[in-house]
Length: 174
Image (cartoon, rainbow, N blue to C red; front, side):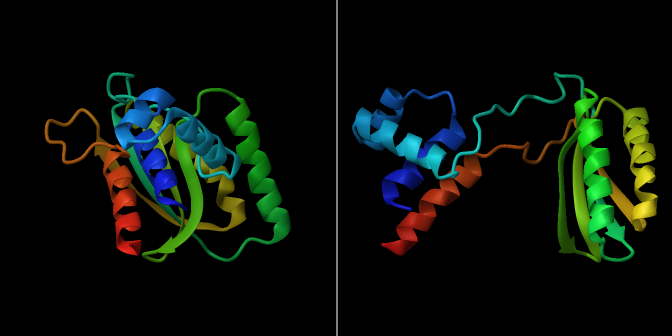
């Protein structure tokens, strides 16, 4: 990516609402250049969506859960198809607490799920829902629960620090 692309992406990560005119002033470029660059980043898939990061506590969520899963063995294609079907149907049904679910590696686990919950009962409901995957050889899982109402907050979710880091990548190339 070119330096202008890194700058545009970085600023949009800090504030997706910023107009192209304001963005151009901020990065010392022309508005048409910023508009072309933004469209290019969207077309090439560097920008997947524009969104906000709300205050989850104000929305009524009290818990952020990070759950690690360990499957006993690799999925065969038929079991993967079944899992996708169950997930797809669940997401269509309405409000769903899961904000991310991916396969991965680390600590002996091979899948991760992040979810938001109003309370502990809501979290336990999701864990009960997850039990339908036992026929997919779900071995064990562990959850780390974050109290969103806690008085001590270290670093709430934000993309601003990542946006600043992206700019250091272009500086290292020069």
